[in-house]
Image (cartoon, rainbow, N blue to C red):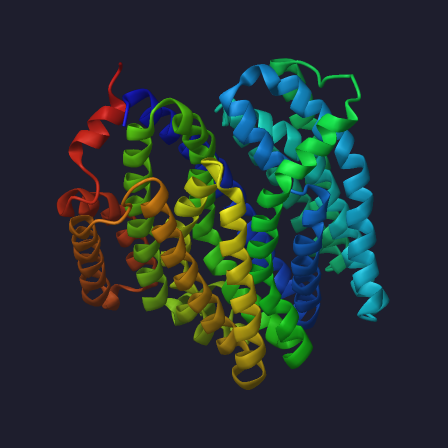
Length: 474
């Protein structure tokens, strides 16, 4: 892998990870505080509405943003044309999304509180979708530091307002309104900054160009729809068979697995334009990039899963309190899906960035179908545990299929020696956790965090030469 590509990907991953880490920390404590202030039932209503809006809100983009990144990263002269077409298409798609979300809520005969929550969260999604064309331009130009600043500032303000509303009013609707304020700020900052740096959107209304944009974005949209379904359908099925309380317990555990996934999300966001560009420019470098990213993602995901599983009971008690004790039985199952999600998303990103988004849509659709089927079988019998096992089984299948697709189309992604090094790394972490059990959870968390990089170097998961390349002045 060339030094410039390595540094660019690391820089973009680092700034996005830093921004998302800062935002996730704020949102993490905000959601924990909300769970305590609102109670299990209201938190369950919010979790249900959040899952429904995430799924149906995908109709507001239809994959246009991903296709824009793919195309503009290969020819940056197209920036103005794609930005203008995307914004015009959003007007119709956002109205469609509102109709789907509110119509579904009415069809499910939800109460007025739930419907109001759905409307506010749909507004949050509308603002975020208007921001997506600008984010796509930042990503395509591989200058994601601007996106990182926008994320940090908007989420900081949103979290501050959310804490104030919860402290003084403990009201579910005001908590949702705080999210809408943050989304509006993201939209405003993104549009002003993007147009200042890259110019204004094209003013000409080219209907055929817009239709072509939507058409080519649909395979990307299908991938996101299917992935979102099997990330969120479990909450809806739990709500149907087990009620809001079970949804609250399950989502308390689920929030803890979302935390490490922002690293995977940042990496794949940085990888997508780089892979798209290298696919046309340098296929040999592309193979190295994908293989190295795969093993690094597997190492991080498995380490996070091991540590979190080992400390699951203490973590739930510390973060949520004893009221959420049932979540501790679900967390050890759910967290191991992270070990498969991280390398799986890297392989999926490689398939989509190399013009095989339709194939990726088929894989994601199969995963969604399997997840729904497993949830319908196991949730009525095993409740939250059944939903967790369904998620884990789906992720294992999806990553296996993606690995084979990458092997056939790009080259082998999996190697035995890196796997042995990853297992050695996790054996050392497990040994530390057992030996330090007497010191308490905080010592173990901090210790694992500080030891991770030295142990990666010791086992060869990360090589000294890679660090030297990263910090070289050239």
